[in-house]
Length: 510
Image (cartoon, rainbow, N blue to C red; front, side, top):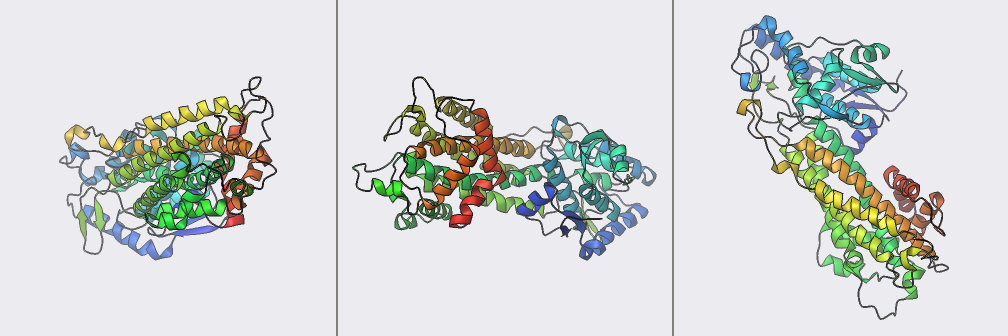
């Protein structure tokens, strides 16, 4: 019996938060009744066309360069099985379970539109595997991003036919045993179904959607960390004036400037040096609305593209039951996803880069702060090496921001002569956001330490909440200790959304 919230999918209604929720196991999934007739109509067309002996790419022909090789109807079922087996060429570490689950959801969702010509049973088995936590083991490397994510999706499809490997209840086992343990039965693929399962952009889109969800939290946490750092550095809030930022009306810039005003509202630290002779702050403080805002605008563009993609039909050929035609095209090409995920990597790298500069400034021993934020500097190194780590992570992100989408190596004997490399873009963006979370954690640690030296002055309305949240998991650094666990603890505040939720409960949505 299903005990988690039920989500009905119809091929058009997925959002990034919903994908994240289902990927994490919070919600059971069911096919909406409204699309059952469409799915059946598409399937009927496939079977009728095969029965009439007509030529259909990938159904009664071979694949790729073998498109002109005719396949007898009696061999069409074997063709689909052979397709899945032959395309299981993935290598590398398996995808994380949430990315695997998101990929399964997106593949079922696309098939639910009724334009892929599969049987209802195929979609329902995918959804039941999700509901019963059967997760195929999918190697993370091997896709060139056109014709879709062929190799990784083939590893997913392998479990549907009772082969390959899967994780079930924390144990890795054969696909057949995993289905049996979950009280599910494998299917025998019929006409077009192998092709429909592996021909699409669901792996890159799933990784991208989960990365975008993490990036959303990271952007908010970066605003919080930036506000804490500016306050601790005795910076001015003049650069966040609404009148100033309205003169350059990028939406992200306006949003971040407003966030900074709300985070620093009623700050006793800011008020304490209102009449000082410092004219303006370094760029890493003064330009927070501009840089953080540009990253937000980039993320918004990425999210829009991903939502379109996750609600699209991306296999080939497309079945049009309304007029009985089969359309061969390139909806499987991952370029729309590849480009935006490369953009996301570059944007998030910039967010980490400006944060690292603030990290550096807090350690210089300026504005009354002790060198390396240690009252016992000399005997103690304080946060000296934390900045090294931030520098290493930012530099690594710069290498990961080389756009995978600008590369292409022809495949299938030249038939598939331009590919997107979009899954590489997706994996790189996931690594970038992971490094960024650690950089933000380091800034939060340092900013909290620096603010400790501003006591008994009061902090801003939002920064005070953030300071308390950090101090609940990490104490003041009065003498040297292993900082790795401190970084991990604060990173968890960022990743889990705990920090953002605490601040937003006080000052409103960031």
